[in-house]
Image: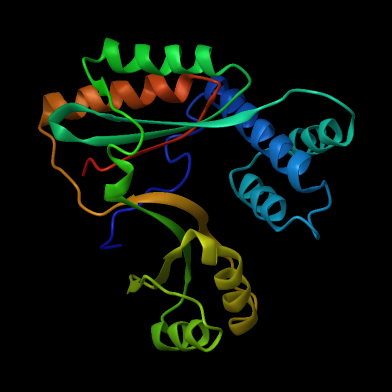
Length: 237
């Protein structure tokens, strides 16, 4: 696709250890979503979308069910969201989204990743204003006009639409996610989304040389290894 975006967990599941960490991160996110919005996916659209995403990423059913069972109980962990922004090699910008039960620990762990790679944490808002918080829906098809017409008829605020290599990509403000998804499901019977997510999409990208790319890869790997880190977004091309 012409516009830069990355599929969630695009480097996941390389080893059994990586799989375990990915499952743990999904379990935490499922727990928080179910705890805050209810354990019934029919009444909690955010949870339903997350379960669908977890299944596409081959998270086992018992992991999903265990997280929901945990949310049905009383008490349990008290997680909160935390977002950190910073600067990687070559002027690249980085956003790190976390779920944590100990913000001080999480901040220290994230900061150490930046420090060890000689990168720099910034203040809140220092780079996020240069990203679009977008709903991204990608599915097989070539009827770009039909997709756009359906979305416009449903009064969905579409930021961008692309059709390349037999795939249609829809970009919309994150607040339009559920309306856009339902509209497309109603308009195109039987479609399956290859990407179905809300991400930070960079407005511009930077090119890194080989050395800088190695540093960026090391930073992302270190951040991904942290249990509290849910997603890492950047604008390195």
